[in-house]
Every structure is written in structure tokens, then in C-alpha cells.
Amino acid sequence: MPSGLDSARQPEPGESRGLCLDLGKPCLISAFHSCLQPPKPKSISTASGAEATATRLSDRYYILRPEVIESYMYMWRLTHDPKYRQWGWEAVEALERHCRVEAGFSGIRDVYAASASHDNMQQSFFLSETLKYLYLLFSDDELLSLEDWVFNTEAHPLPVIRRSCLLEQEETPPQ
Image (cartoon, rainbow, N blue to C red; front, side, top):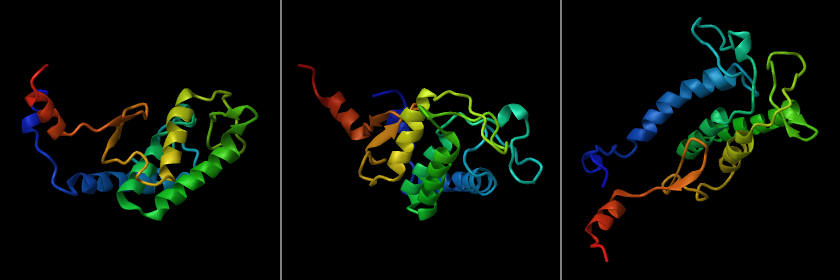
């Protein structure tokens, strides 16, 4: 067993969920959803207390990143609040309206421009992450249950290995 795993404090039931909701709510509601309709810029600032916007020209682009959609999927799985699926559907509609090009999807150079100026690139993570999280957002929770699967940085599902499984492996003598 990896060092320290046997003594690691396990969160109380609901503790992780509460923390996630506390952290996710202001980000999703104020910064990502209410103030900016998808597609979203690379980064935003709320420091002035005004509406969340991209403050630098270099941050106004959208390259089909998955993080907002990923957050919607996790928040849906934790709460089953229909607003997260609604926001996900709004993102689908925005992707179709603003990012769809003849051969697929393209990033946008300036999300605030009156008409989209595409960067003519469909990043690989759009298929492997953004669309995967949209699929999971609208799928039954049993498909890749968060109790049994964890997603790595590139959205690849990995099976959860429970502590009891690790202990059983340690106790089983080699053959």
C-alpha cells in the first residue's frame, strides 16, 4: 500500500460534496453563466466587483476548452439540479451557433466580437474532453458512476481502486 494511504483521513459522508458545492456555485453562477453566455473567454476577472469579463485582449478567445462543461457535469451528478443540464444545453446551442464550421468545430478569436472570427483549429481535447463531458452530462449517472470511476486530466476514466482491494492484495501471498 502506498505510504500514508492507510492513515489518510477519509472525508465524512457529504463533506466533499458540500465543499464542492460551496466552491462551484459562485464560479458557475456568477462568472461562467450569468455574466457570459457560451462560448466563454479563456479567463475572466471579477476583481472590480463589476460583471465578469475578460480584461485582456489576449484572454478573449475560446478554443473549445472543456472546463466549464466538466463543471456542469460534476455539479449535475452531485445535485441533480436541472439548471446544470440546461446550461449544458445552452453550451451545445452556442457551440453549434458560433463554433460550427464546414469541417467540424473551430475556436473563436474574440468572444465579444459581433461576428465570430474562427481560428480554424479543432483542438484534440474538444473531442476527447468537451464532447465527452457533454455526453456524460446528459447520460444516466450509472454510465461511468463517480463512485466507481475517476477522470484524469485528459478526461480518461480510470476505475476507482478501493482501500479494501489494496489491503487484500497485500495480504495475498505471492504464488
